Image (cartoon, helix red, strand yellow):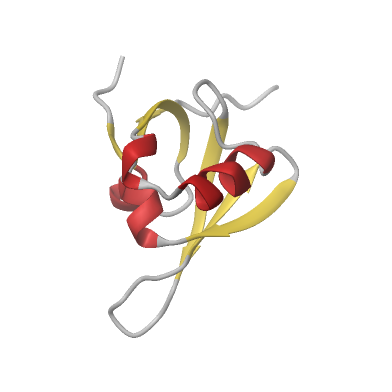
Length: 89
């Protein structure tokens, strides 16, 4: 099993499973929004894109069939474990 990292440090196009979320680092309103968008422990995400010009904010994620954007500060509060991608024959 791979070691966990924060979502903001996950390489682009890497799939990962959310293993922990530091909800104290996220405001109540933003926490509700992230939960409504499906961000919770156990869900798989894929980091697709990040913002330009050195700020790398926001970060685009695939959650299920949706593409969502999260702030880098929120991604930093989300711990993920990379998962291997298996290709069906």
